[in-house]
Length: 249
Image (cartoon, rainbow, N blue to C red; front, top):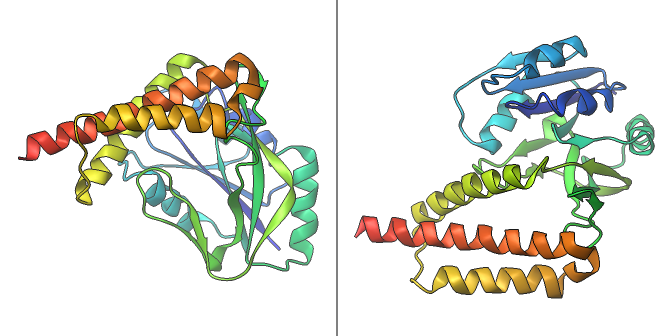
């Protein structure tokens, strides 16, 4: 079975080499870039990837479907540039593809935040469907929080991805700002509205959910910071939704 790895990128020079090195076992690696101004594309080509550039950004789901359309393998493994496939998972993937019993496979994702592997806070096991038969799977068209939909049985692998989502708190804050804007616009387009107190209530509930119900307190000071950042993201999202509602009156 031929395996294609697809990665979408923009200014991922800090991550792309380690990401691609971790999937050197693949038959084909495709990087679809959306206009990087750093060395992402050059580094990807130097590590054997086929690099295509499309600077018109349609959102995460549509962009990943563009990358999927470039793949030629029987099976596709979709990765983000800040993810790695450890050797144990790579061996399991190769073994499974010799005699697949499903059309898609989920895998857990272990994320690193401020130097700590997060085992609580809602970040573990964080199972994601990333390996699927090319003709049976497609990404949703969501601008953010896209996922793969597979026509057929889905199984779960025992191995896990490694995830390095934020190089710094500044990067986290920037992502919260961008994602909250996109989520607010999507919610507004679907007719959702909120009140002036909505952002405060959602932020409080998000903090309690991450730090208490999801046992973020067991993740040390990183769990406390993460809960606070998640609450901030929720506040931004609903504050922006409230502002959009006010402007549309």
